[in-house]
Structures are given as structure tokens and as C-alpha cells.
Image (cartoon, one colour):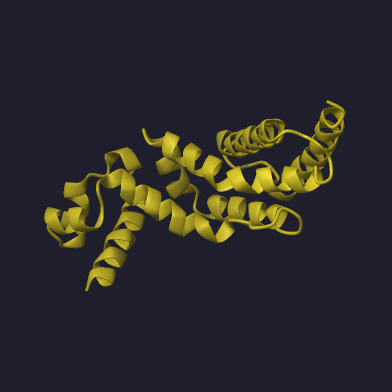
Length: 184
């Protein structure tokens, strides 16, 4: 029953996101539409923001890439195409008061990926971990900026070309940053 209730809450939440911005969705409206009590909602979720975080993890978790090479470009393209296909929902979240949740999610999604990539590229070189983190953080900021610009441009940018250009920039930047750091 618990799993059924959670699925019903998440499905109702998705349907509501198609119609109204996230910041207009209340626990009261959600429980009413889902035909459950407030207590039932709070049994499963601390608040509406925890529901959003879990929902984002479920909706976007399929696009997490474990390996940079051979995976990040295709998964990023697929993710952005999915966002474009569900633009109404994306903008109902993106333009709401909870934009920080989406940005935080993208940051957390990419944290380990960029760091692991930079570490692999720096293998055998004597570069302090702090410097490797600085390089990977720069890549994360560039990636988040790329995604934000895509949203700000009403998802009209050419996804495939944009991701391929970003990939080339990452490779060049990481290579140069590691080479300039390995002598210090």
C-alpha cells in the first residue's frame, strides 16, 4: 500500500506540474487531488520540497552517467531532448521559487563525474587534489551555465551541436589546466 500511495502522489504531482507552476502547488491541493490525507502525505515526505527532490531524482536519474567518455555526451543530449519534450513541466519548475533545487540537483548530479574525469586525465601527474577539484568545479560551472542558457533560450538551441561544442571545450580546457598544473 505504501508504494502504491507514493506512486499515486508522484503521478498526481507530475500531472499538477503540467498545469501549474511548482510554487503554486500546495500540499493541500496535492492531497485533495490524490484523495489522501495530509498525514498520509507527511508520512511519505517531509514537505513539498522533498517530494520535488525525489521527483527530480526519479525523472532525471536515468541520465546520470557513470563514465565521462562514451556516456556524458549522449546522456546530456538525451536529458536536454527530454526537457524540451516536457518543456511545460520544466518551466513550471525552472521559473518557480524552487529554481535553486534544480540548480543544486544539476550540481550534485555532475560533481563526481567531473572530478573523476579530471582525475583520470591527471593520472600519473603530481597534482594536488585541491587543484583537481578546482579544475572539475570550473567544468561543473560551465556545464550548469550551458544548461541554464539552454533554458533561458527557450530550449531553441541545437542540442546536439551545443553538447558537441561543449565537449570539445571541456577536453581542451582540462588538458591545458592539467598540463599547466603538473609543473607546480
